[in-house]
Image 1: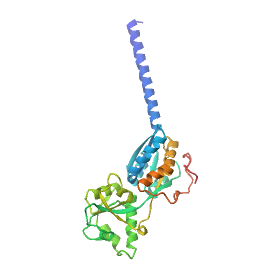
Image 2 (image 1 turned 120 degrees about the vertical axis):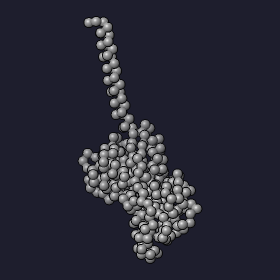
Image 3 (image 1 turned 90 degrees about the horizontal axis):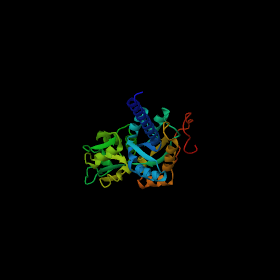
Image 4 (image 1 turned 180 degrees about the vertical axis):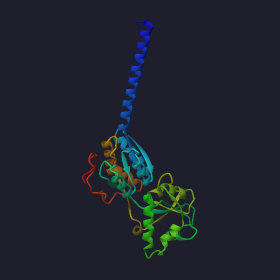
Length: 293
């Protein structure tokens, strides 16, 4: 065989082996990296506290990196139903979690980890809405979340409770809804509309009124507890979690002393009961529940 041809053949073979080795190394790297990544789909209202929780969790779990997708719980549910991959889902209400569970997408039994309540906020310096009664005054502009968004559903329930009370007119809810000029896809969008002065008032979670990014932008009008049922937040691992144990560890951290302390710092209250309204068996092949049921 010609020596030049032999050298060329050997060089080509060496190059092929290098490419194969590099490809295998890259594949191995890609396989390893996701196992250290935890993707959490969480309600928009959890933005600041969950980032703080992630910082503490990563410090407790060296090598683990938490990434987030924050949006309205209903939008996250839709993404998961259409094939989006995540390890953990934290919703602002049970309805969105129940829909995911019905599709057999969960990896363990959901549990509540926090509660929240609504408040009315108005732009600082504006006197258009000095009290709850003024929400029904003609000409007032109001922002609330869409009906399918947990905060929007809670807001409508709150208005109905007010209308049923002798403290407000029978048509109070109807009059307030007539003043709603925008229905937002998540509660943070409502808060931003108010902070920018685009509306006279909005209904948001109490925690949104205190968020660091918008702190100082609002005048807060509290809603009495009898009209303000607690918003309950459930959390669960997804069945397609790349590292189910890390997903369960994150959930346990959120529910533990350190995670709960961080949530309290951001205005969330602990759940009255961690048990969600689901007692059916966990689908076969799912990861074990994070705590005994």
